[in-house]
Image (tube, rainbow, N blue to C red; front, side, top):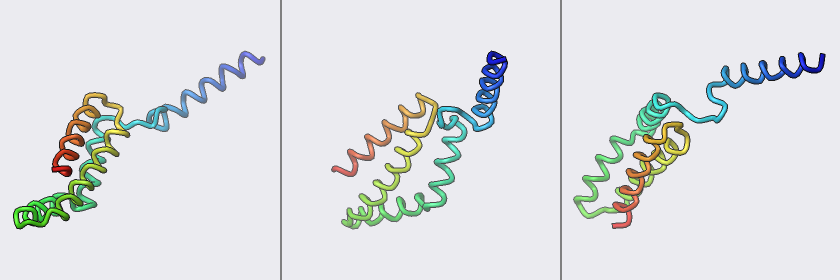
Length: 104
């Protein structure tokens, strides 16, 4: 009887982990890309980076730094959440490049 209960509990636990997506809490590649697009749109990052580059060309580096920090934070969030190691590595390269731009 105890064996049947253990097997049933294991099946229920497996079923729950499948229903919840991934048991690790990580996002698939597609979900990660959707996160990036949705958040970038929500935060108006394209407009912010465009205007900050224009401001940088006019000598105002504060808005560029702020925009790049926001982009970097989004990339870091996606890198931390993705289950795709190659995508996480690519995002990390972009993060490192953004940090270098911010520093210079």
